[in-house]
Image (cartoon, rainbow, N blue to C red; front, top):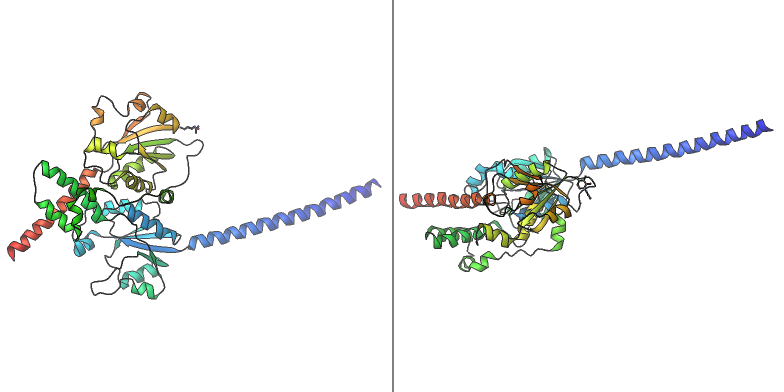
Length: 397
Ligand SMILES: *[C@@H]1O[C@H](CO)[C@@H](O)[C@H](O)[C@H]1NC(C)=O
């Protein structure tokens, strides 16, 4: 009797195990196969391409790259070489290696192609399709015509491999140059009147010269910050439970390769990089009434688009207080060696006095010797080279 019971129990157990094993195997098989499918799909993905000069890069470029990336899974960005830019529209303000640093640091960019032609050629397009396996070429909704009057993207359009994105409203390089020139003119009127600058304004204004006659019209940005745009640019993630939070602050005006490099190094010192962006009033008070060139929201978007940045404080205080360190659980406060104002070290009220006294302040060696003033100077000397050319052309004609 007992033996029979035991045998029955054993059989039930065996059948049960077999069923359970079967279920487990099915589950494992289904999961694994799905995993394989997912991986294969991901590896292929949709590859999209966008190109540009990215000279005087601003958040409008970043927004274009964000939109391009949203149309695929892998974004390749072609950056036009210096020689191609010189041949087509005169010397660039930013050399290629800095333009590459900036484009590569944009968080939606997966790969950079450093030798893109100024206007897309049939040969280059074939290279994109065959070598880089690009699925779609992306371009803004402004027309792009070749010197012979044909549409640069006609071929890609015919092949059904062209997609368009909307231009970002409220910003253009011309507009930024206008703001910069204004800051120079404001100074030159008082320091040393220089008639050169008015012709410079004409050169960059492209017929919108009325803008330059009214100072306030140029100073006011046409950019309207919306909460949605900030969300689109944001990572949407807070620090993890044991994250070491690093804090760096500054104006980050005319966001450049020097900014990118110091942010990269700062991010390496922790798990989460919090960037404090000073208010327009703070920047004006420390650098002069003609600064900043870009307003607080524009500067915030440029910093947010950088892959090394986890979060920004839109309008950070000049002084880093104990309260701030506690609220954000900041482990380390850093500052680069190359900065527009080093006067803080001499000042009676050092903005970093609290983190210094707590032993959580560190000076970082800036890898690049560039400041916002460098960028403004480049624009002016770029123009002076143009003036010399013009002078030679006129005098030898
Ligand atoms: C604060 O940061 C430290 C790392 O520096 C971390 O270990 C700790 O968990 C953080 N505290 C909170 C409340 O997040």
